[in-house]
Length: 218
Image (cartoon, rainbow, N blue to C red; front, side, top):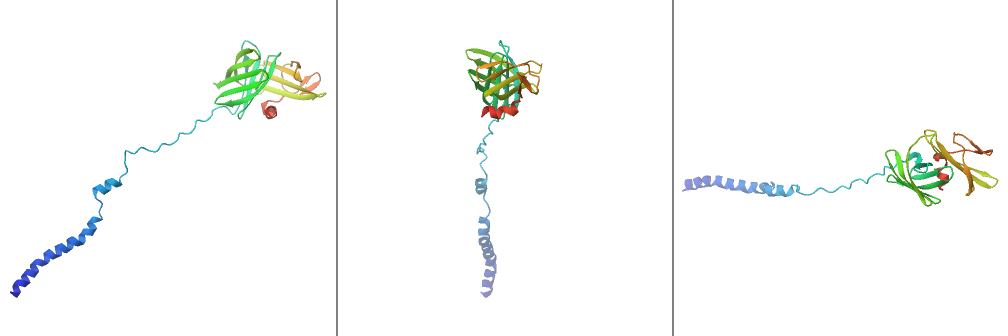
């Protein structure tokens, strides 16, 4: 009988060991990721990406440029100069003139002066638009120019009166200008040849827009 119990005990031992091994292996098996858990951790590929704001369009208006050209059906000249958004202009046909100031933005300029309005689009190296002077209106096209062509202005004080001279010179040598004493008296200026201009013995020193735009607009 004793021998039978011994055999039975020896036969049961492997089953007990297997059971113990299964119990010991249980917690370790639970730590492994299941396919469902792995799927939950995977980013949703259908989620739309966040929108990134596109940079605002940059203003391509020239920062520094000079235009000069002929006014159609008038024969006079017009000059427009831009310096970092500041704009000065001058229209003259020898008999009438207008000094103008304004702004430049989105390749468009708008200038105003006494009884005068100028609007123009800037494209293809030209300023093209319209000038309205009192009850008259003309179109113009002014190309970019380099010194010594372009716009010039000179000022002086003579016996308590302010003298202002304005000139426009084109690359082909054509020029026009006018010299005013005060606001109502004046006459056509001599042809512009650069340097100091003598007017009835009065020396006038013309400056390009770099030299006068700030004082003119202030």
